[in-house]
Image 1: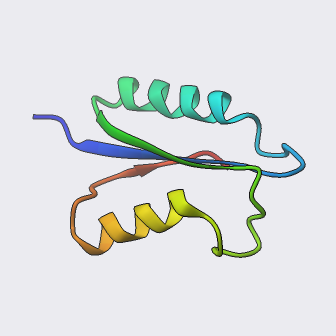
Image 2: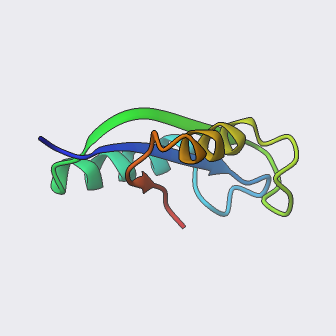
Length: 77
């Protein structure tokens, strides 16, 4: 049975990380290459990475981690 992963993507205000779709596609490709099943995709669009304030996707990710509901988390840098 494959591990179940969650994808987290964040689109910086300056788009230095690439678009959300580009990040998500890269994470899906990694999951496919490594036999991972993607459970969910969490994201924060046009939010500064300097603070976790107002980052709903990141907050949901932290909540799922604290609940033990997450195995691998996939993201790009």
